[in-house]
Length: 237
Length: 321
Image 1 (cartoon, one colour):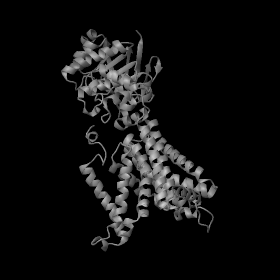
Image 2 (image 1 turned 180 degrees about the horizontal axis):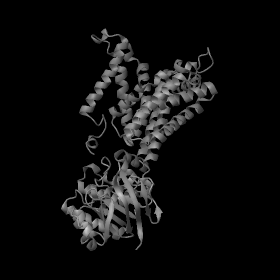
Image 3 (image 1 turned 30 degrees about the vertical axis):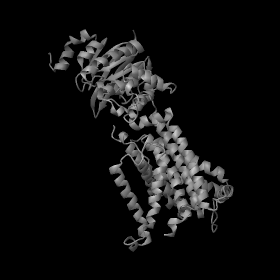
């Protein structure tokens, strides 16, 4: 396996506060990588920088060896790196089917392919409903398949489990695992649900105060002192 | 009350409604489908009308070349305005558009050598000569009258304007049903989401701004032909808001609501001049003319209260977010 997504020395400040502070990490092709850290660790800012929605002050981001930092969000998406948002960005006054079909890079057969994807996540029966009528969990699912419609090689999921009911969580986990198996998509997932992260991820990256403080397999990270400190707030001298 | 029964009068009202339909269609495409707040639509109408008239009078162009070029220039002006202004957030963009429309009007007023200044198109030609730009159009209108056997000039104009409006409505209706139109609605719903799905939001907005401006250019040409004369005063910001009222009256996000809104607006606008009974007749005619604005304002307030989706909009879409 090789690094498909590389982030090197990424810095993003807000009014002098370094939200992301020289963050360096890589995501292996075909992996599911979990990105965790306490609130304010810089995970979302990192996501926004990588996906082009925020411009980093310095550092570089490469996708399959090509630099993508400084590119506009839509160009990054077209290059094969697609993100979802913490709160689902449902196109409320469009139908569920349209929400997915619109994401197709080429409009040919977009509806048919969208319908197929919706069937996969069992949203098929809602295809003609306005997306604004879906529940929070269903919207998360919709965002996921919509992102898939773009044809990503790397998918960034921002807290896919947030606001999803426990029953739907199990289903959502299956769908996320299937995205890797079936579609061969590399996944980088920010998630607060540690149980989910530890179960789904091959590798876990831990951020705190804008920096990457640990990375490794779920087992390695779980026992890492710096990680325990970051989460519990303790300090070892 | 004789005018009430006059066919020519209502034909005239219909012509104006048709012109407003074309003007408001541009706004519907921009706002109703792409979420773009354009408060300067009248500027592009002015640019279309002036380009056509100037080319005919000063350059001796045929109307049939000058008018399409006027439409093109109006569209290009939208493109040029959009290049810097569309980088702003939507509310700031709206402010820039209204400023732009006032700039256009002031330029038209003060660049007398180009536009005839505040005297209007009559001063487009040589000093002491009343300039005319619509000779060719009048002949065309007469031919239409002969061909259809219509005695009334206004009725002929009514048919021409509405034929053009129907063609443009159909074209826009077809366009918004394509995948392109689907992307526009996605941008209206959530720009960031559209960008995250690989859509070049800026490019789509630019296209929509240019197309809407070109439609205003078409409206401008018809306006010029209908009135045979115009001056910068004809392009007050109020006109843009009339077009907005039409879009809101009919209902947002649909193409065929625009002519309905325009017809209702035209009826209210013209109809209020028949309010010459007591106690309203105590007001002077000019004061009473302003009553129509009050009436239309009231209608819109009531409409927004009881039918926020417009006369023909879908309510279930209004409550979603």
